[in-house]
Length: 116
Image (cartoon, rainbow, N blue to C red; front, side, top):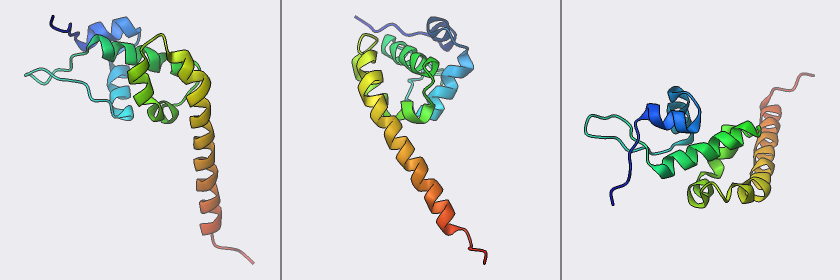
């Protein structure tokens, strides 16, 4: 059976976001969305599930940087397993991002000239 394909407007309705949001998430998260022979995006049921999970995480306050780190898990769990990711993996991701942020701040502070 052939997989059902949705145009961006139909996918956006199912995810309950505007079309430009799907395009933005695709670009920012490095998602690979298939295109037809005319170059138009088309979305599968799996793409739509992924975008619904991304939306749910955004609504919980997670930034795209954190979400990008768990995209492989999001692609594999479907809608039912999102609680596993939010409770376990995202907490680790947040900790990792905090460490990266603190390291970046420390590097900036160390690279500043010292005024005496």
